[in-house]
Image (cartoon, rainbow, N blue to C red; front, side, top):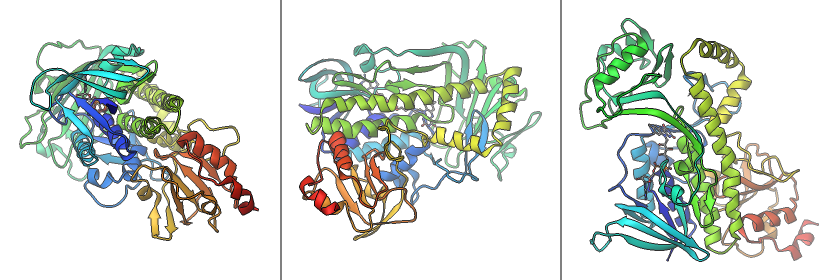
Length: 527
Ligand SMILES: Cc1cc2nc3c(=O)[nH]c(=O)nc-3n(C[C@H](O)[C@H](O)[C@H](O)COP(=O)(O)OP(=O)(O)OC[C@H]3O[C@@H](n4cnc5c(N)ncnc54)[C@H](O)[C@@H]3O)c2cc1C
């Protein structure tokens, strides 16, 4: 019997498998593909997820460069370039990395952690009862025989993408909006070399003018995207409204060129990419913005695109999905280990649904704000004026990065409770360590920053479920002690010189099913 069966070895399913493995929970991951899916999708990650990768020690591997991530000087919102460089508190991080590389790194990490990833196996059906789940999977047996296999497990997680069969078989609705008003066309292609400004990367189109790079560039007739990359052919795309397309005809570079002609009212000759970089000719009619009516049906949970789909504008998908995975991982592990009641799993939805709703909200808003029409043009003029206000810029940075998230916290709780803990350095007895480094193995952290180790002195024995870190912070930290969940969110905090250990004890019991504090000594030691 497997602890957890995961349908889908996309980024989110693999991330969950890694989180579970680090928490000592064994999972098997099924995916019908022969290996990591080479279909070009994400070109990067946006927001807090980049810092999360740093906290799992995989940032450098994905970025291909040493050191922690630095805040990004700007990003895009509905085709507006928003400058974050002047923000007092800049929460935005960006990581340019193609989705194939993300999946390859996560698949290699899962293999290192001993996860059983079964490529070539698709979930085909399942049943569940009080004791567990039974999953039927089509595919090839490890023995080499073709044919279906049956796996039993404690839980099933559907990380099988927007068309999730898990979601459908669980009878979970997927309400939202589907529209067939738009047609997007995307390809890797070369343009005349002389048109590319080497200093800025902009494209100078004769008869039209300059198109900035890496932006949804809006005209009165649609949207044009020009995305040059150092290591592959440029990605070129258009988005048009209310122009029916022949969905059965194969997509061609000529079709994209004609579309660019309509959007820019100028001709941009395109040629096939050279070299062995990725190839793509994609036409997508319509758009979906949907959220599962619930994220859990007893022993079956939904993760990532299986739970929510939305426009890819601005690239928010993996910031949402990978943080779903780390939110769910330690909770599911606690339940599988029997440390904590299964009702803890309800907090997966109560915490992540509002975050998903905000992503649907801002991607729908961005889609509306980039559509054609004179009213939209007027709205954009107004929005451009609003963006001159640093408060609006901070608001957008917090919204896109996820820094505005606060999970439910009890009335009167410390202001950090429910918030993502910022990274900071602690001078410990073993030297200076960043909180991010201390988070690599996904354990809960009890961080004692009191001058005299007031919390550490009250710990009952050597806890194995929670890592205790004592030391002095480098710089200002808005707490004297913190309990940080494996997903980086604060479960408890105090700013007192003598923190209230009864509150801390309630928090470790609630989230991790364990008591650290020896209450018989606590009163005497705090006295
Ligand atoms: C064109 C495009 C551009 C994007 N750009 C960005 C971007 O720049 N930044 C960003 O953050 N996000 C971007 N996204 C969104 C991002 O790609 C998704 O949010 C992400 O892929 C979701 O990951 P997932 O693991 O939930 O699902 P998926 O990546 O869809 O993976 C699902 C997996 O499930 C498998 N599967 C399917 N059926 C079954 C079955 N029956 N049994 C078992 N396995 C099954 C599939 O083979 C697949 O491997 C983009 C999306 C698109 C379409």
